[in-house]
Image (cartoon, rainbow, N blue to C red; front, side, top):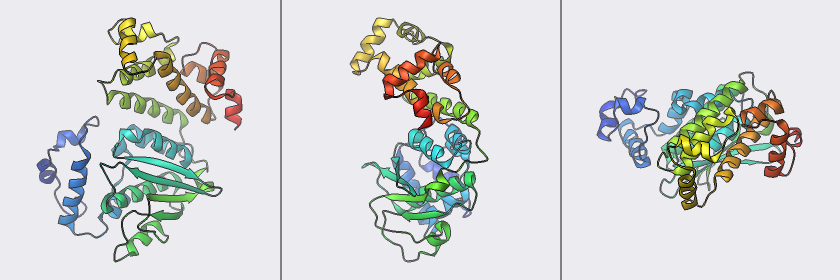
Length: 315
C-alpha cells in the first residue's frame, strides 16, 4: 500500500490491527483478515499484479522473525527450504509448504487449507517472495525452471515473465515454483550454521509458546530450554511446570501421549538437523541433546532411525 502511496494505517485499524499489534511478533490475527486486506488493497490500488509487486519489492527477513534470519544463515537453499517447510507455522497456518524432488528439479508447492483457499494476489505474493528470498541467499543468477498458479491466466502475462523469467502455467492443481537441484544444493557464502541453529531453537520455543494452553506444547517448550543442561527427567519437567509428576502424567495421558515419546521426538528431530551441519562433531551434538556420552546418543539415534549417526551423516 505504501509503495502505491496509500496510507495503510486507517485501513488496518478498520480491521482491528493497530501499530502496536504490527510491532508485536507474538500477535496473531485470523486469516480472513489477511484475505480481506488483500482484496481491499486490490480494489484501491487497481494494480492487476499487485501480489507480484509486493513479493518482489517489499520482503525483509525481519518479517518472518527468527525464521527469516535462519533462512539467511542456511548452508544451502535446500536447508533453507527444509527450515521453511518445517517451521512455516511461525508465520501462518493458512497453508503448508511441500517439497518434491526429481533427478534435476527441486519443486516447492503451497498447499492451502480448505478454510483459506488460494486467491490471485496472495498466490503471486507468496511465490514471488520465495524467489526474492532465494535470490537474497544465492544471488540474482538463480534461475526459475517453472512456476504455476491455481488461478486462471490473466489477460497480460508480461509481468509474470519479467519476475520469473520463464513461461508461467495457470489453472494448475497447486501454486508452485521449481529450481534446478544443483543450484538448490550449492554451498552458500552467507552460511552461518551456528547462528542458524540458535534461530532454530528460538523458533521451536516460539512455536511451543503459541499454544500455551496445550500441555504437550508446554512440555516441549520446557524440554527445549533444558536440553543442554544434561539429564532430563519427567519429575524435573513437572516441577518446572509447577505440578507433580503424577499430575503431568495424567495430563499427558488425556492427550494420548507419553513424556518419553515427546522427549524422543524432539531429540530425534534436532539430531537430524545437527547431523546435517558439517561443522558439528558427534560429541557436540550429544551435548546439545542432553546426553552425557556419545555412546548413549548413538544407541538412541539407532533406535529412532535404524542406522548410526555416522551412517546418517555419510548418507
